[in-house]
Amino acid sequence: QVQLVESGGGLVQAGGSLRLSCAASGGTLSYYRVAWFRQAPGKEREFAAAISRSGVRTSYADSVKGRFTISRDNAKNTVYLQMNSLKPEDTAVYYCAADRGYGSSEGSPDDYEYWGQGTQVTVSS
Image 1 (cartoon, one colour):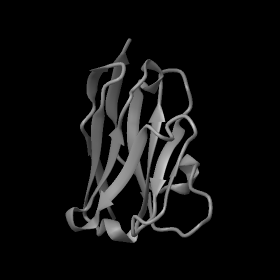
Image 2 (image 1 turned 60 degrees about the vertical axis):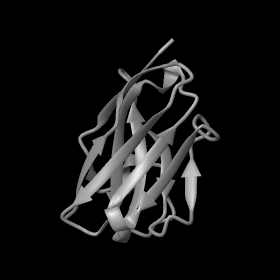
Image 3 (image 1 turned 45 degrees about the vertical axis):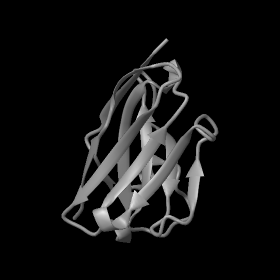
Image 4 (image 1 turned 180 degrees about the vertical axis):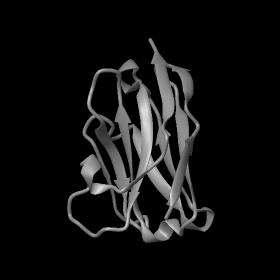
């Protein structure tokens, strides 16, 4: 089964940018659809972005649309989340998730079987 490791989080000022990476091992990531979720303190885990196996199709939460871009490099077994124009409300632990299913739903944590440990993103005002 695939193992996922996120990296790239950190502290950034409002308006800045970060790029998160989700590296997979123990499996071929091209077999999996992948998503990024985030969880702020005291809040439920929420969907941020998803990408299809080929990378052709992407989807975004309204809160990040136009600012975040999800992409993948299947040759490197890695998925990325480019985050621009960051806001303090983007502060959260960001998780990478993957699943081999073909269901139409992609925005719920229940849609994904494999998870990384998360990486902290903090945006200061």
